Image (cartoon, rainbow, N blue to C red):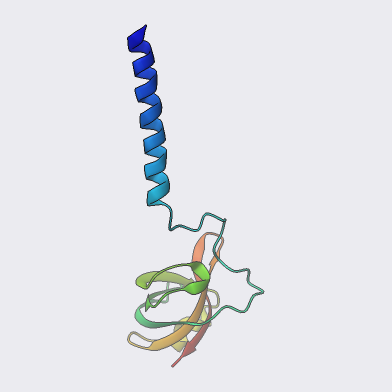
Length: 115
């Protein structure tokens, strides 16, 4: 009987410490739902550089600074474009300002201005 109580106590201690560890690892994450701003809010332009243009797929690879409205750090990633005409406005190496939003689960360039 003593072993049963010890096993229960150890199991509870492990469960509590695991949840505390997980909370500590995720403490810097915004868990309030989507961190993206609604489309009607004025989103700040982000700065970036075109690394690849894929006209056939309607995608741009952009090396960018922080995307405040999406809560993302600086990185290089692929974006869809809202308007296919945006593709013809840029070429590899161009510096741009842009606004990206999540549309139907895909990161999409909504506005684009060449510097």
